Length: 269
Image (cartoon, rainbow, N blue to C red; front, side, top):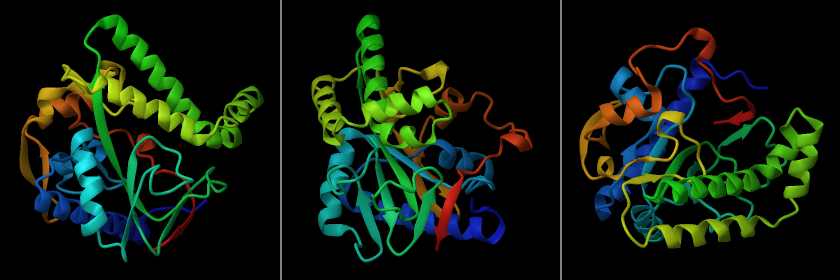
């Protein structure tokens, strides 16, 4: 396992900053609404940049905005330096959200060495779908998305799960073709996105229990500018409400033992 700290961590963060700047450039040029998300949003508010021990970066947008971004990247993305990765651009990609990758680099997550997709240093680009308003449908939708997420994870789960039973279970699920899960995900999105709902979320990325079914759509309607590592990016105008849903009392630093970095088996910058 590579120990990511000090100069290596900072170089990793600056590589991710390159990609944030590229996403922001394209979104501004084409009028695409995006927001910094997760630890990147938290770092913006609490630290004015990356959380000191954070090794990734996150952007979020509504699905319709992501599709505009996907199309814009076909003619606008600097493909010598960057690669927009989703299931349509990388036949080996497994996850239900997109990534921007830095060409000529490697960040290989521990336990994913056998996955054949592009493994450059990346930022996550999450896109949100509508969540049913009716409580029963909302619960059924949540369970269905959980099944899709586990199906996508099965290729990794069959290698990394500690339980032999779970490894065997994921090995069985992994026999289902990758494209089946994305087909199911797209069918579900097409159905739920026919009309606006109160909540939206990225359906294959788990949220805390306090907002497990999603975030209020109204939070995605307004943005403001905020400095992050000396550059101006878009964040939620009501970032306080958003961060409280994700982290609770987000201005309190976690104890040292919880300041974790994703384990990697190989890093090349």
